[in-house]
Image (tube, rainbow, N blue to C red; front, side, top):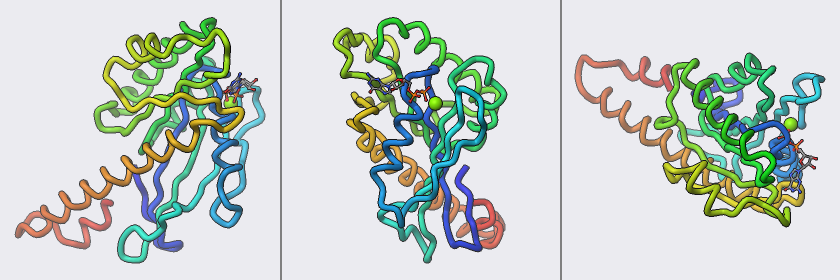
Length: 217
Ligand SMILES: Nc1nc2c(ncn2[C@@H]2O[C@H](COP(=O)(O)OP(=O)(O)O)[C@@H](O)[C@H]2O)c(=O)[nH]1
Ligand SMILES: [Mg+2]
């Protein structure tokens, strides 16, 4: 869930890169970090020292003024793809505002893609969340591989619900920002819709005081 930091006057959104181990999540986050201005981004932080690390950094939106003087900040996380890190994954996914599912175009990783997708849905359910209320984009990574799984197969078998999908080669940064841009726009759009719904509730008498409404952003 978005959170409001009164001290820094920021509304913060948590975006998570999920997917099977070695699909390119870390490469994605590193590519985004490299593409941003130094003044706009925080440090790239590794949250633990295991082989499949959780990476984190935050950045201010290039279009910073959201509402009433608050800035928009995005917190980017990778979650470990390996099954042994289920507990970490659940923790990182808690309160997620938007998801990039990084699928691997390597045919040898086909089953790993399907497994990671099922695992993601299960983990969200464990957290009481459902994909219908979380903006998500697919990213088909490693499109540079000569034996990459055909796009049509990825689309029909991994993404039958038709989430926005992007081809990428995260190592060279290709396709990374495009996916993030669409995701963050949708996250902000839904945030504004929810704000308006809340404001309308407030304007009805005896429902909720303005103070309560802003506290529950
Ligand atoms: N060919 C190719 N390899 C990639 C690409 N993105 C990542 N890799 C490689 O895939 C491996 C796993 O990448 P990493 O970002 O650590 O994956 P993570 O486990 O999902 O965080 C590394 O050896 C990367 O160099 C890509 O777009 N194309
Ligand atoms: Mg990684």
